Amino acid sequence: MRQIILIAAMVATFFNGQATQAAEMSNITQATHPRIAADSANNMHVVFEGYAKGSDIREILYSKSTDNVSTWTAPLNISKTTGVSTVPAIAVENSGAIDVVWRDTTSGELHPDIYFTRSADGGRTWTKALDISHTTGICREPAIATGLDNSIHVVWVDTSPRDGRPDIFYSYSIDGKTWSPCESISPTPGVSSEPTIVACHDGVVHCAWLDTTSGEERPDIFYTRKVSNVWTTPIDVSNSPRISDHPWLACGAKEKIFLCWSDNSQKLNAADIWCAIGKNGRFAKPINISDTPGVSSQPIVIANKTGRVAVVWSDTSLKRSKPDIFARVSTDNGDDFSNVLYVTNTVDISKNPTALLVGTKMIVAWEEVTGFISMLKATSVELNNIATGPVDQVSPTIHRVNR
Image 1 (cartoon, helix red, strand yellow):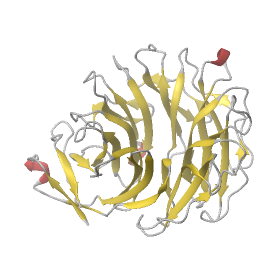
Image 2: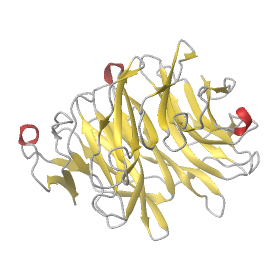
Image 3: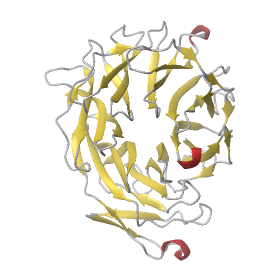
């Protein structure tokens, strides 16, 4: 086991020298771009880009862990198309069915579409890949979410409208077989990209994305939600004087919405991770979640109905050219947060984190790059003993994870 200890003084009022336990890291496989989800039995399901045996074309592969990420099944090719398959996203329905989407060039290298597959038996077998976008434009960057009613919601970037200027497109399904007509949900004059989507416990679907409406040199994070089958007018949540990037959404307890992104407003040459907490379509003033001396990027925010929240990101504070995975967690639905936690402790490059909450644990997977080799790794962190305090009073001191 590894123990998180202080490497500098903490705010005694909130921390009192408490420590947190983290499991050892496990290797998943040699691959890139992982995305992880869990079912109600706490089985972990991860999808990623890789090469099937005997193939030199990138496919979407799947692996499963039933023992708290200690071991993983052999990678299974679930895309099986004639094109290049990249950038997967995954979600698990309440029924236990596993849904995966990705970008695929089967319909043409110049006009990739968004493809979908589903497993109703815990990842053993998968449906034939289905083209769910089928538009005339270039489709990329898919994201997926599932509702309490097992509905499936997918968004992606599409260049079909407005003379090729990208918009965010949306489609949904109640069975994974029949899909609603694609619709643009980002009617802004700017370029829309990097969508994120989540379906909350009240049935409301939320979407955010990066948008250049406020200026190509200072893109912001825009947001909309689907209420009674109608998408609201997009609003600018970040409204930053500099560059916002990489938005990510999560649903917390009591219908709270957590929206995180990276932004260099506070430090010109080093982005921080910012978070805005919202409800009913309105957001409070964003807070600087990372506030480290390094470059913070690729944020992921996860939350659940018990009030646990975690923000995970890649950060160069400890090794300038070799980022690590950092996190901050909350156990009271975002009212208080922990100090910065140093999740990885390696000599290599840790990037592209993905994370989820399972019981009292935070599960984190990421890419570990050594030279030209990218290995997917995973670990779990026990959250029960992590102390928290008000964000503006908690020290940004980094707590290191020791093995």
